[in-house]
Amino acid sequence: MQNSLLRQLYVDELKDRYSAETQMLRALPKLAKTSSNPDLRKAFEEHLRQTSEQVSRLEQIFEMLGEKPTGKKCLGMEGLVKEGAEAMRSDYEDAVMDAALIGAAQRVEHYEIAGYGTVRAFAEQLGEDEHVSLLEQTLEEEKQTNDQLTQLAQQVNSRAGQSAVENQSRQVSKAGKTTSRRVA
Image 1 (cartoon, one colour):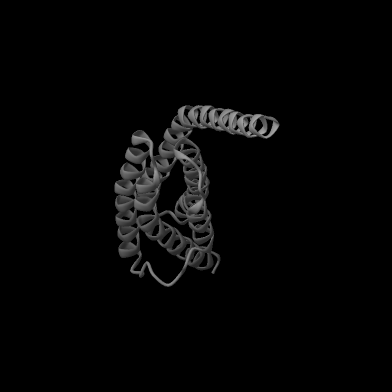
Image 2 (tube, helix red, strand yellow):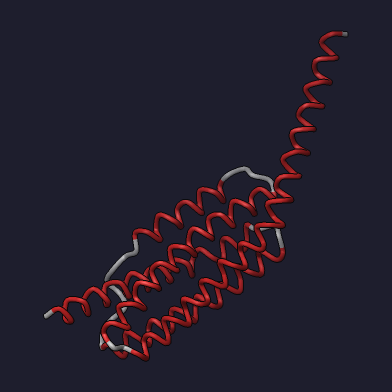
């Protein structure tokens, strides 16, 4: 009885992961297109390729379980995708936009790491060794993507900071010119 309930929870969580990954298949091309940093764009494109493979791994697991991967919508990922879309609609300049995209992407990665850690633990408990191996592969990819985004953030955030200082200087300069014209 306990194992059948855990198995049902496991299947539900796998469906959640599947929904999350298919949502990311639609979101990642938009992130790549919005990015001005070529390294960041390349990272998003690479993760799109990985995400496609992750969907295939989940489909393998569902086939082994004799289950269908559909029937559940991942509301957590839906919210994260909406937040990312909101950032893309902002009027941030290039480096600041890239910093916002990295922040949105890392929230997704942390969510995925938590989700895959959970389903991997369930698979271990259920003795699904083949599933554990597939899920571990995806979990490691998510961790590597997060690490890569952290490294990119170091350069991008530095550029974003410089851009903000330059914009502030231009605004101060414009304000000074306006004030001196009024005085004259």
